[in-house]
Length: 221
Ligand code: 6PG
Image: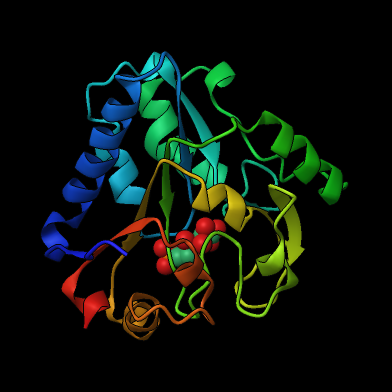
């Protein structure tokens, strides 16, 4: 596991957006289209806004989602809504380059299977977060989805963090990604991050072993 980057809180947003931009540039140097997959939650929102300030050939970037709640795209809990407001709208990205998880669909398993068909063979740049229970994406401790090795996207029901029904990438997709940034801030994540950095495989976030963790001192302990 690469050494975690410990960044003062006032610099975390910029450092995270710079890291994502650098990794996108590296991928853009190797191929015409690159993929960026983003998580929801509160932590990454400022980093997405800062990323939108970066000058990149954004028309060559396809945006995907690490997970989504099964709510309509304009719902307050929608990860799409969060990313749209903080990144997609500021960059004026076309719908053709944004691959939204269809959280409004009743047929959750079909929606997950359909999303898997949109994924590239390998995601180039991914941002994940960590919950206080050590979940990442919508892969929660003790959930059967943790052992999925074939399906690339699953619809899961969990009770740790509402809303209960989620669509999530699975570990094989996250572990196969080109560059993964794990962005974590705040004292509430300290216990989880201590265990993740020790490789405690009870915590789902520990399984994304190709992650570059970027933490503020409060989350690092
Ligand atoms: C989600 C996220 C989830 C998030 C963690 C941390 O849809 O909720 O994808 O995995 O990254 O729960 O969330 P915070 O950044 O809000 O602490």
